[in-house]
Length: 315
Image 1 (tube, helix red, strand yellow):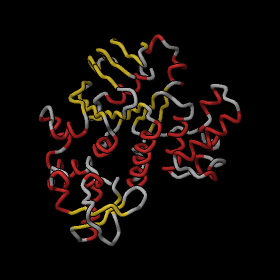
Image 2 (tube, rainbow, N blue to C red; image 1 turned 45 degrees about the vertical axis):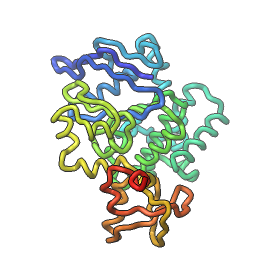
Image 3 (cartoon, rainbow, N blue to C red; image 1 turned 120 degrees about the vertical axis):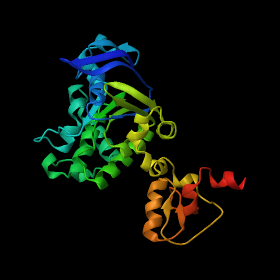
Image 4 (cartoon, helix red, strand yellow; image 1 turned 180 degrees about the vertical axis):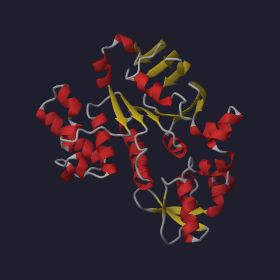
């Protein structure tokens, strides 16, 4: 969907990115992470030409981006940022409808799309007529994402979208983005400085430093097979075990032949979340339920430390 070939960009004497080669597969959730000044935000902004590259080629859906009118290019890409940028004197519905109005959608099409996106992002119908200052930070960010998705873009670009939110709201929105990606299958490219956020969201993780790609791959590949001491140090040698837990899910470690009463874990939870539940409960076995809330087995504390799945061990 998006391809960088030998792309470079400088700001005066300062080299932002150098000879960048990247490929973002259609339908993938890609995350750019790196040190401050690593070039990750510049890379994102070059995709929709908010920043123009100096050399090399950037292709979008097979076309060189400079062969497309800027407005046409940007209307095919949603863009969500940390500061949100909602129009303060427009209602929630008007903000979400910004791009569809520019594209001359009918009133009924716009109303249907606003209703659909508010439901998708967990925004109550009663918020439709409110103004941004009447919303919480999390609600504002959801409206920003809804606006970015309103015209059904092929690509969603996100630059530190949850950086200003409290941890609870941030976690909830990360969960929403994972769910929305599964539902819509859109190509998403997100920039973050938060390692745990990157590991939680990414299918394709790109680590940058000094304007270059240091290593890319799945989060598990990056943690288990770091290409250099820098990669290992960046993700934290001492926190490796906990971060690996965040990439594995309760449903993969359920002992399905067992049943237990009590407050249950959900199969879709990460083992990292399960670890917190074990510590809070002071126990070594917890019941598990599936997405429908039906009991599906148990999780044992010692299985958090296992490299193999319980059914593989028994086999």
